[in-house]
Amino acid sequence: MCVKTTTPQGEKPVFQKTDVPCLYRYSSNGVYYALVKFEGKQKRDSLETTDKAVAKRKLADFQRDLGKVDTSQGKLTLSELCTRYLDAIQGQAVDTVALKETIIRRLRSDFKPGSDCQVAKIKPSDLEAWIAQYGFKYSSHNHYAQVLKALFAIAVKDKVIIDSPAKDLKGKKVVKPIRITPTFDEFNTIIADIRKQKWNAEANASADYLEFMGLVGVGQAEASGLQKQHVNLSTKQLTFFRVKTRTPYVVQIFPQTEALVNKLYKQTKQPTDPLFPVNLSKSKNGKATCSRDAKKSLQAACKRLNLPLYTQRSLRRMFITRCIELGIDVKVIAEWQGHRDGGKLILGTYSHVRNVHSDEMAKKLTVTTPAPAPDAPA
Image (cartoon, rainbow, N blue to C red; front, side, top):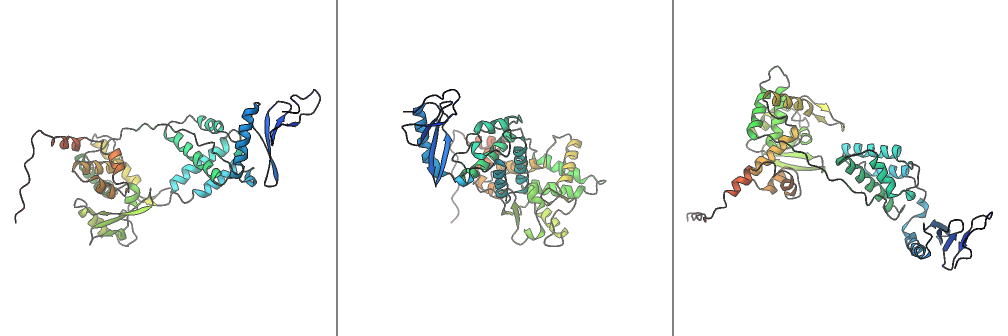
């Protein structure tokens, strides 16, 4: 039982002891509080209820969770937590770090409770309101939600808080755009058209770059990073570095690329020189890339040929879909892409782009049983 239930007018509100150890009631509003001695210090926290039965349950939860929190970090601010997060992501890809730094910068400047607020006092609704103010759709919303989850996961791991206020943030379903893919004939026509532009001193270099991506099935980062020392003509192998996974992988020099690779190899002098030395510009991460001029050449050729405006990424899709149509095992295609999932991504992303291979496979399902293959000669 409480000693008092109300505070007489003119008297100072007090914490009233109840018959439950460590449970107190604030006389002015009837709200229950937990008052517990922990690690030699008194910890007091509002249980945010005027119902005694509810307060008893919350008190038990509060006492159970005390050991899960490092009390010395109780005053850690959001800004300080952001600093810990930024330190933790520095080993990631440059573009990834830049995106996350932008999100953290916005969090520090636009978060309504302020970046100096204590992490322990941040509510899920505060985070939901912060993201909602931008009106993001799909990808951006999901990027921001992922950063918040990772940010407050650090606070949980470091025992600043027990539960993350971001754990229930929901992402938005991304609507996949229609990505057009050139046929192999269109690809060859585009490359031939670029090489015809004699007035453009860089036409051949751009054509080599685009043709290489289409015939080998690599992206801009992999192609731009290829050096002479990564080409082994004796074993007919190319060694690439996949930027996304930060791992090297090997691809055979296909018959369709052998002539082009030999030409590029002979043109390159030093082992550390890139195979595509022309039109080099610096990207954000400081690496050389000739994709900017190649992009212009590709778009110009598509316009001259009255074709859709294909992108450099569409050349990789063309390579993969063509491999599928030719009946090449999906697991092998995945290895050529530097994937380690046994072809799961290929099947889920690329195989639906064109149905030619599917149609050809369907023709094999007939009511007649195919004749057995002849026995091999003894």
